[in-house]
Image 1 (cartoon, rainbow, N blue to C red):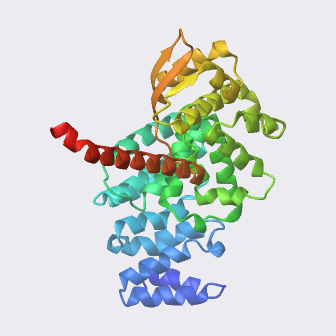
Image 2: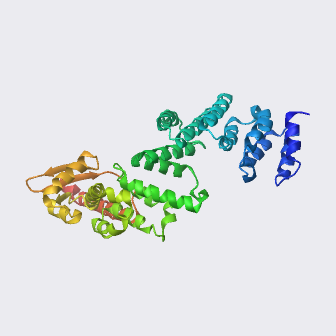
Image 3: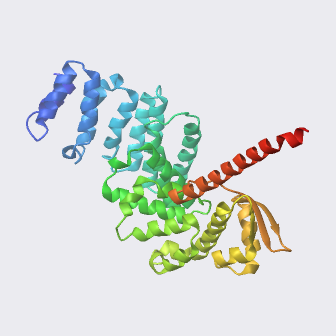
Length: 375
C-alpha cells in the first residue's frame, strides 16, 4: 500500500470531511489533476483542518505526490494556508523557499512565494527584510503591463508594511491600488469599514495627497455612511473643496482621533492649499486674478500670509502662475488636475458651455466682418 493510499484510508475512517476524502481519492485515482487541484485548493481552507498539523500532513502525505502535475501558481495558492501551521516564522519561510524552487518556471508563482515570505517577516516585525523584498517586488511588478491575480497580494503586503512604518502616503497609494484590484463586494463588512476608515485617515495625513475625489467616489467609503464614523466622510468632503469653515465646525469631532489632533497644523496648512486650488478652479478665463484679500477671507489666513501660501502651492506643483506683490494679487492660470465630484463637474461643464458660446460668437463676428477684412 502506497503512502497516499494509507493516508486516505486513515482519513476515511470517519469525521465531518469523509465525503471530501472520498472525492479526493476518486479524483486522484482517475488522474483528474485539474479537478483535484480545485478540490484541494478548497479543502485546505476548511476550518476542520486548521487545528494542529493536519494541513502539513495533508501536504506531506498527499499533495507532495502529485504537486509536479499542478499548475505552479495554484500550487503556491494551496500551500499558503499550510504555512500558518508552522509555529516559527523561520520554518514557514524555509517551507515556502522549498516550494519556490519547485515553481521557478512560473514568474507569478515565484512572486507570490516572495510575497508570502515577506508577510512572514512582517508578522515577526523583521522590517528590514520586509522592506528589501517589497522594493525588489515593486521593480518586478512595474515591468508587468497588465493586472494579475498576484497584484492585489503585493499591494496588500505593501500597504500593511507602510501602515506599520507610519508612512501615510505610501500606505494610501498601495491600499487604494489593492482595492482597485479586487471586488469590494467580497470584503466582509467589518473589514471594509476598517479599511475605509484607515484609508480616509491616510488621505488626510499624507503630505502629498491633494486629490480626495478618488477616495470619495470609491465604493468602500459606503461602509462608513450613517455610522459613528460619518464625520470622516464629511471631513474628506470639506478637504475636497477646501471648505475651511466646515473644517473648523467638525474640529470637536475629528480631534477625538489622536493622529488627527497631533497633525492639526499640517491639516490646517493642507486645507488652506486646497481652498486656494478650489478658488483658482472656479475662476473664469476672463478673471484669472485673485486678490490677497479674497483669498484671506476664504482661507481665514491673515493677508500677510497669502503670499507664502501661494509660494507653497507653486513649489508643490499644485498651481502655476505668478504673484504680484505690489498690487497684492495672484495671477494663476493652471491648477493641478484632480478627480472631480458632480458639483465640480457641473462647474466645468458651465465653463465649457461658456467657452463654446464665445467661440460661436467670435465665428459669427468673423463671418459678418469678413467682407470688410477682405476688402
